[in-house]
Amino acid sequence: MKISGNIITLNEEANITDCINSLKQVCDEIIVVDSGSKDKTIEIAQSLGAKVIHQVYLGDGFQKNIALKEVQYNWVLSLDADERLTEEMIKDIRSIDLESTKFDAFSFRRKNMIGSRWIKHCGWYPDNCTRLYNHKKTKFKEVKQHSSVPANSLKTFNSDIIHFSFKNIGELFAKPGRNFSGRAAKIMFAKGKKANSFSPFLHGLNAFIRKYIFQKGFLGGVDGMTIALSSAINSYLKYAKLLEFQRDKSVTEQNEFKNIW
Image (tube, rainbow, N blue to C red; front, side):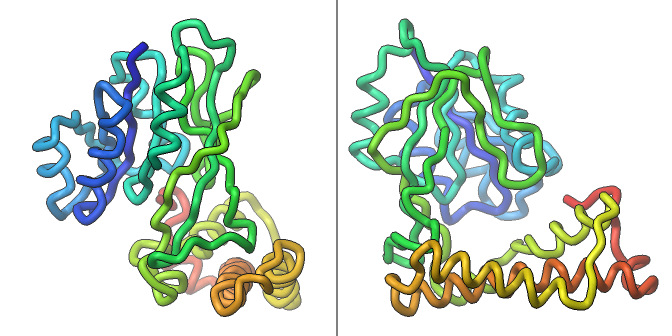
């Protein structure tokens, strides 16, 4: 049974070659859904034999499902551009009889990296992700943030996707194109959610305690502390921005809420 590979991209010229070559080890076609790259992402993808679809970014789940209109095969393997298959994962995928399997989808662990460092704490591992699925039976949830693939019948493998999350600690706080707190605040504001003067501090503190204590970030040394702090700052800013939208009409008028993405 053949597999279609699916990648969503925006200015991923530094990653797209390795991602496509990784998928080619198990996939029989590659679909790249690009949301307006200004670099050489599209040119590189096409030179490597991928089919490129142009689509303004719709949000995570919506964007990842765009390829399903174009894929030739029932089984789809979805990777982000900064993710790679490990040898163990490749062996596991090749071992599946997709023609007769009783499963709708397959899940793999994900090794999230900062630089060359594998982060094992703070909830960053095993970080199971369902990425190989029969699109005739399931697909990504059509939500704008942190989408996943639901499955009635799921098998989890003990092999890993490698995720090159951040090049360094600095990117953890200021990766280009990341504005999760701003987007989240806009979504909450559009839904009518409210914050008060204590919300930023309380949510920030809760995020830190969850990452550093309950998810054992303290075992990760400086990286564990740094990740817990970045999570706290992101949560703090999300509620601070929501509160600002509520309190300052001039700020609200500067922002577009109908097209957050």
